Image (tube, rainbow, N blue to C red; front, side, top):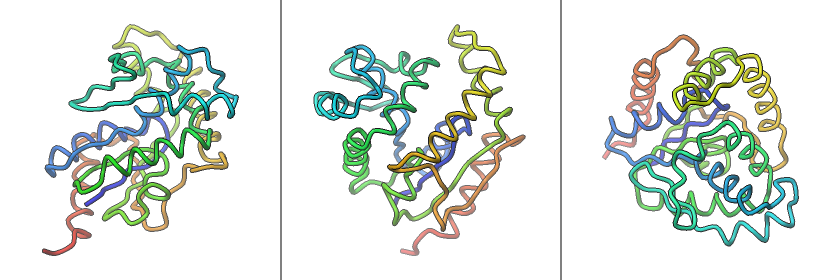
Length: 218
């Protein structure tokens, strides 16, 4: 069984997906980390993130492994490195690349084959797993998402101005929603949840209730 959680940056998808997966005994697939990893690898290799031809040639050379919460690219652990503000900005650019998306969508489907999995991202319920058992679209207002992101970055020792984060989030939302390939949007059969003012536990509890209602009977 597949549960998808789509939505904009900073909505809490990864945190909620991890907790939900653990609660249900499912595995968790962090697709956002996959895009960040490819973006970081491209930056380190001096590949232009806006050059589709260069990205198409580069992405097949990237070896990506994810397990036990760690992200390894070409044999190097980049778990912490991909969580910087710069890596996040870069991931929004590589996510517009048809070649990158084709490669990662294939890896995501392969990873979920034969498994019960919670998958989070931008197009999980619309493109990657359109027949998922249960789909969610998780969001929050821009200011709430900026506060969450600022707390995360501060904890990592990275200081970013709040207003700058709000503007970055709004720009990212527009870019994700209007890209030609795999745009961010709610699937027609997705349950929309606004997490503004809600705790992780409250969001997960609602998702669990929805999943139990949709879960196929044995």
